[in-house]
Length: 336
Image (cartoon, rainbow, N blue to C red):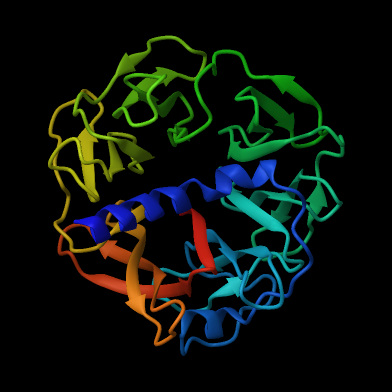
């Protein structure tokens, strides 16, 4: 029981690690390892610009054990082929697809302070959108018209950045915490989590829904569990989420629920220990980052946390291993 509790706590910490990166000092320059080597994959070499031919998932890969601390945005096809780096300088995180999937927004310390960047999906045409030395944000969500990116700063205030001009304005109607916020694919609603007791760090957290302008708010779940990582289905009819709480039977499991609060269920039973999920564009699969303690053979550190990215077929339960990292390396910020 103690081992399970430790693992759950560590997974939860890692699921929020990217959120805290904005408060850290700039990370040092580093060179990412070859994605094939990191994944233990026999996939072909990374594709050249203009040759991306699948609906890739993207994530942040931190390579803290290799040449100093650092992180880059990686992309990988759901069949495990062609893992590739989108960014190269080792100071990048928090990727977000543009609505048409032609570009990726991300945060970077490249200029010496945390700033917002945009890059074409093949890694070309990178440009920095913000330059304010006081700009301090840790989450980027591309709004559906493609012209603005929503950002939350360390004070929990939401703003928008104009993609063409870099102009920053307050985002009216977004008054919730920046953690676990997801925008529906049609851009009309926001899902987010709220603790039942905001003054108790151990209290359960439930999913709430509202329109993007702040109207029509309602509480979607009433589970008594600690819920995180709400994820919209491609048709916006369901939300998948994770619960790693000890408040109920949904410990460390993947669940889904309809938007009217009905049909709370586990889409597929697994023995995985997930801490991040993303729904595939066709709705048939989930990308899942899991964690498990594995032996190292080292005297001082006999076990370490192995983080693995899988695809999980919702209907049949089949899994495919795509990428892995052994802590202190880690993978996070999953998006598909």
